[in-house]
Length: 174
Image (cartoon, rainbow, N blue to C red; front, side, top):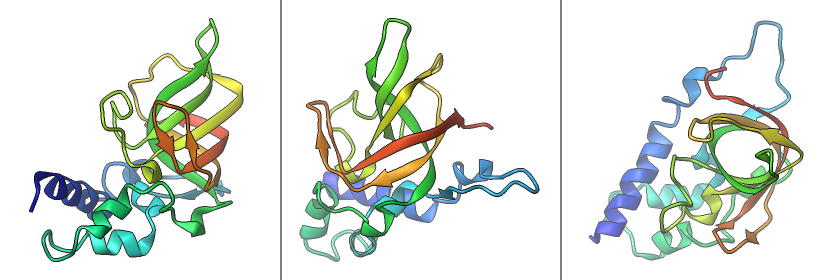
């Protein structure tokens, strides 16, 4: 088994098995408040059949599932048009002189897209925030709510397989 396959297996196993861990613990909605957004995990963005084959014991499958995990067209079609709530880290793409961000990538872990290689396209969401968001702590995780689409975008920094029209951004601890 290659080091790459072992790394990918461990990372995806963590996404699927520990998915209800640190991110989900702050998933509470105030009593009486009903959210219009479905809370999802990063593993939910991977097509179920690809995720299932990736989570098999390393070496038990051919290399094709590992290549498919990084293919830009492998998205979960059930996510298209969904109103979701997902945690992640912001990688600014477009901002003004006041540091108001109007477009950014949402990624599952700190430092993604700043180091090579970036996460697979189905683990990157291109977020449009036409009204802009003022952020002072981009090194902190955030909850994002919005409608996602399965649209492949390549801006030179990275390729994303999802886009989101931002409805709400809030600190992860809230």
